[in-house]
Length: 170
Image 1: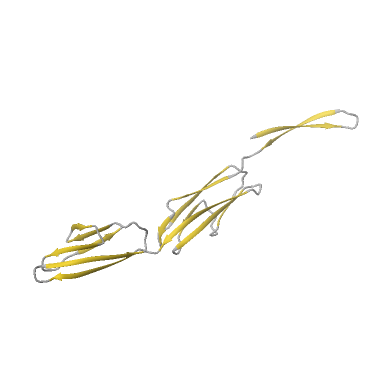
Image 2: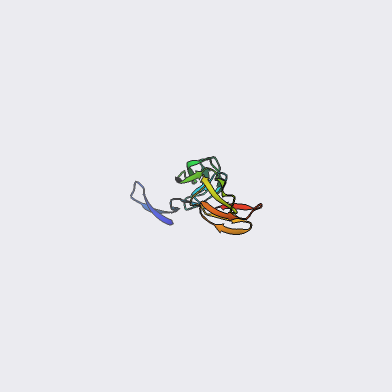
């Protein structure tokens, strides 16, 4: 806010003059990072936005990645990444904020089907193996357009012929 300073000036004969000076004191800058997620899969970006207030313009904004905008799309290799943004105001006051982001390896799904009984109609055992991605996983088995199950393995009673089998993993 604004403050008025009264400064008494006294000369050698004792004559006093009050000088008034109004100064503006800005609050320290505040900085926040807003992210749409802190965990993602490789290849899927995390949107980071910076909000700041207070301090004295002009402002300089710098990400630890070298970017200088208020919005940043973070892509990373699998692992934990600490991303820091630095705000410097016009007086040189500095504020840092860091967010920790986890990038998981890309989702990998393998599917196997084993025929168990070929004589009494086809009975197949379907199994999935999932790695990478961000758990928990949701599975949906679709056989010939009909949802048949949601577990990692499924016994399928199939009639002779060809079938369209789809497994959706989210």
